Image (cartoon, rainbow, N blue to C red; front, side, top):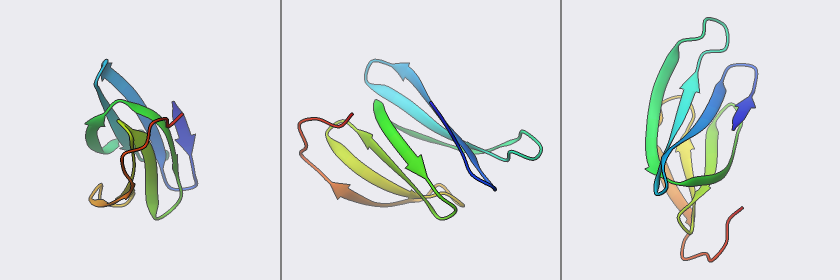
Length: 81
């Protein structure tokens, strides 16, 4: 999965059945800024400030500039697709 904005390219890669990684790239030079390791990602979206991703029954938010986890928006969900 890929999502592109003016300053960021975000990709989601499934590394195993239970584990995934979000990678944030500089679209101008192709360098990876950082990697967020998380549970299996089923969906995500980003803008110039945040990344929101669904995984493992949760909807989580990270700072797109730093990769810092901001909060879990929703938890104990049965389906996130």
